[in-house]
Image (cartoon, rainbow, N blue to C red; front, side, top):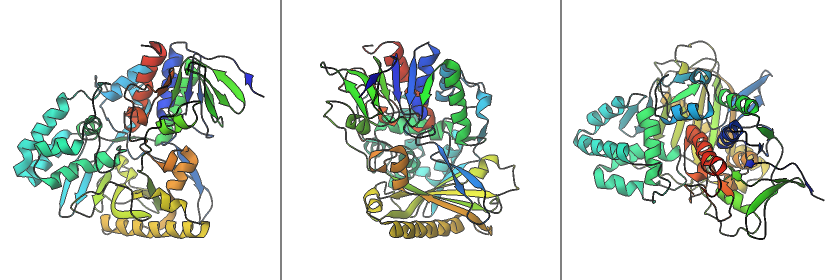
Length: 471
């Protein structure tokens, strides 16, 4: 039997970055808000986990998702996405303890492009490696600068089509797209141009940093702020159903037989996933197919700068970049290789960590039995270690620990259909769904990255929770 609990002003489903930010923003304005999280810890796709060390006991903790915090700014900079985030949530820049990247690198056969938190580096790299394309590149940069990617009524258009109108060298197009696609696109081999602009500005104009302490630093800040603002959060509280009335309006949720009521419901669990649990909602958006697996290696010493001085390497061993689900269990042709220690390059002592991400095929991983699953993870590990050797010449560190998570891990702990990371192909820019009072926040609203996810939660809370559902 269900019982009606205390009514809320707003319910937020999911305690990922967007859900926590939305909860904070609403609570700051004295809204009675509850954040409901199915897992036992917050963070969603950008969380953390722990494993026992396989050779000498003890516990190791690892980030999930966070290779880099995009949209880097220096202290005091105004008018940028990260500064807007700080202002909206009343957070201090210093609390994030940001460590800027050294530089990152796009590596294709025979050519590399470096970029950093200073856009001039990428501009100079393009001028040096593609001198015949520098004027075209500058035209693209100007188009990106003047494009209003935050216009919620912006129509969809293909980034590849736009790029081909400006740039004639196909290799340069592939290289520029590579980091932007793998760090945010739900589309295969392409992305909506508004999202391209968001990612171009986030990665190339502003750049990368990493909080000292990793993703836990961000989560701890958000959790503390939510508590201070008076917001409520419940863990191990899966929403079984989003309830609607006879007029088809969302009125509350069912959580383990308990009914919570609110005039505004913000869902960060994904658009298709939200449709699946909403009474009477039929029109399901398309489920994305992009999923990944990651190998994490810990060595007995740090990788010296002489072996690799990049923070992240976007590696592709082909002239074209195939951004699509792997035809087999995983595709080792391309990878994102993260060297988190290089965010703090001054620290030369201690263990060294490398994270290698491959595109994967969810459906094939799903069919594996336990033995075959472990064997495939070992194959992934072997391929990834070969790539480590290739990218860190001369490094002779001893492997102390390894862990691999697969699309099945993503599905198990995030409950995203098909283990997808970047959500549905269909986004809802203004957050609205066919069900009145039910809104989408996070990746499927259309803002990307950790900063983008938080800004999504904030902007949708402002629009639908503070201005009113009919604003």
